[in-house]
Each structure stands twice: as structure tokens, then as C-alpha cells.
Amino acid sequence: MKDLIQQLRENSKDVDTLAAKFLAVVSAKRMNKAKEALGILLPAYVAGEIYGPEYREAKDYLSWVVSESWRSKTDHFWVGKGGDNAEGDFMNYISGPSNMHEVLSFKKKLGKLKPTTKLSKYSDYKLSDVNPEYVRVAHEFADAAYPIALILKEMKSKVIKGKKPNPEAIAKKAAALALKDMKTCACCFRSIAALKNGKIADHGYTLHQGWGKSASCPGGMFKPLEVSSAGLKYMVEGISGRLAQLKSELAKSGELKALTVKKGWGGELETLTPDSPKWNNTHKSHVHAIEKDIEFNESSLANYKTRLSHWKPAP
Image 1 (cartoon, rainbow, N blue to C red):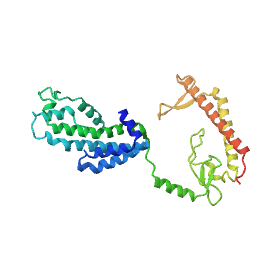
Image 2 (image 1 turned 45 degrees about the vertical axis):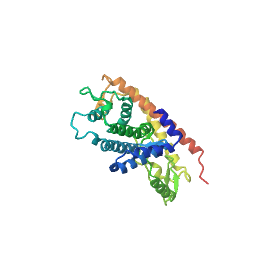
Image 3 (image 1 turned 180 degrees about the vertical axis):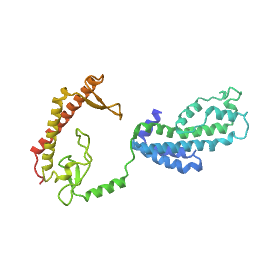
Image 4 (image 1 turned 30 degrees about the horizontal axis):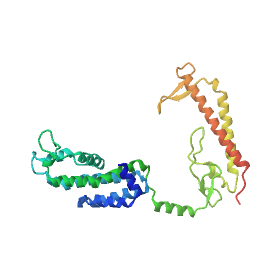
């Protein structure tokens, strides 16, 4: 397996040869699906990556194709001959592939067969008793499908999560953005479209706050950072006030007589007091949360103050 994969990496033209060899054993009825699946898998293999939805689509198509093609190529060798015949035992012994993963073991099992191999414990038929054309077709099918199965297995570790980007959609979005006057929000520093009134458009706000996350950034109240430092001043004042509140809560945390918490994830609220069994752990967690909040806000405040001290309008 490793030798074949290495060979394919070194010579991408071999991939086209393997595709043609595989299509030669595909039934005419499944040819379009086979070509569609190979059209997804093989270019991705050459590129060295494939997106999850495309990988699953190629795998499902190829598994369906290999199962249907195997039956169409071989059923006539044993169907209708009754239960006691060498071809039927051969079919049961090799267990034709019903998906691409089974092609790997199918090829391995075929490779171990010898003319003297007994095909069933219920009869005396050996491989030498089987129609030679049936055996030839089985080997031909395995040889053609095996490299594709190897490539599919190899690409499983190259899957990229998410849907493959649409170049047209990306280009359309880029063109639309090019028409907008994009400016920097003075509160969250994201690039946001500027409005005719000189301010920037309202937008989502993800800066952490002690009470959660708000639905909108306050930056929409101010002019862009390129022309005004008002947003920076607002944030310095707001975070300073929040810090003062947190430090006051921390200073008074030792005097707490009650804490209201949830019973488990999403559970009902319960009020704990110092004589409750869970008080010590709950109180420690409460204090720790305040300390972490103070740490974060002090870091944020330092950042905003630095930006404010170095602020200059854009030329």
C-alpha cells in the first residue's frame, strides 16, 4: 500500500491510468456516477486535501458503484446453477465487495488463493474446480478497484472540516465589500462599513463582559477609529467602572452570607449559605470567577489605554 501511494505521489499521471483501469470494470449503468466520484476524489488526491462533504460524496458513490458493478460482472457465473456448484462456493468464499473499504480485504483474500484451496467446509470444491473466467474476472476487478480504495483510505486523513468554499460566492462578497467604505470600529477594532452620517454600521459585539455578551457593539455610536478616539475613551471609562465594581465585589466576598447557583447544568436555582455542605467549593469558585474577570478586564483596560495614548487621526 505504501509503495503504491508513494508512486502515485511521485507521478500524478499514474492517477489517470488507474482511473481508466477502474472505469474499465464499471458497469455501463453506473459509469456516470463512477466518473463523477473519481472527478471529486482524484483531483483532491493530487492536491493533497479534500473537504468533508466531497469526501463523503465520493466514498458513497464509489461504494455504490463497486457493489453494483461487481454483481453485474459476476452474477451470471453462479446464479441459476443451484446450491451445489464450485462457482457458488467461490462466490461465498471471496465475499464480493459491497463497498470500497471491503475491496482491500477482497484483494488480499484473492491473493492468498491457490488452485488447491478448499472453498467450503460443506463440499470438496477447490479453486481449480471454478470456471477460470470467473476467477480471472475477480482478479481483474480487484486489481482495478484496489488502487482507488487505497486512495480513498489515504484521503481519509486529509479531510478538511466544513464545506468547500464557493469561489463565485467569495468573489461576489469581495466585490460587494470593495464598494463599501470600510472603517475600523473604535470599540472592537473590526472592519465595519461606514455610514453616510459619519458613524459606522451597527454590528455584533463579542468583547467579554462580566454579565455575558451583548447583541450589539457600542462602536456604532461613534465615528470610526480613523477619525475619532471617542470610542476608545468610552471603553476606557466603561471598563474602569467595571473593574471598580469587580474589585469591590472581591473585597466583600468574605462577608457573603448567601450565593445563588444552579443545580447542575441548566438546573433550578438554589441558594447556599455558609452552613451548606457545598458552600466552601461554591464560594471558592465564585471568588475565582471574580479574580479571572478582574484579570481579563485589567488586560483589556491596558490595551485600550495604550491605543488611546497613541491615537492619531488617519492621514
